[in-house]
Image (cartoon, rainbow, N blue to C red; front, side, top):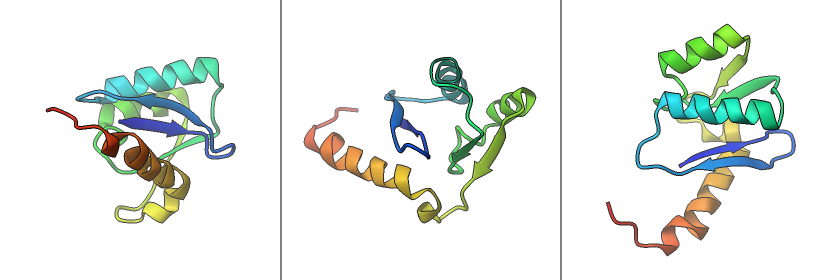
Length: 100
């Protein structure tokens, strides 16, 4: 699951659920959000494989976006989304038996 949250309003803007999420999927979701919600001042993310993918970083740089990455092993630097992810897991995913 890819959860995208507005850091200011703490509103969840998007939840993308898929078996495999690529950097191209992330860019597609972000492009849709840029059109519907507006362009953010910066994008903060963890250091997972999708946000740090070269193709995504290059595209965001080309568009002039500032990117901030939290330090590995420091979830408190992005506490609101980490809290949301935990609640999402507890309230949605842990209630279902998911088949691989």
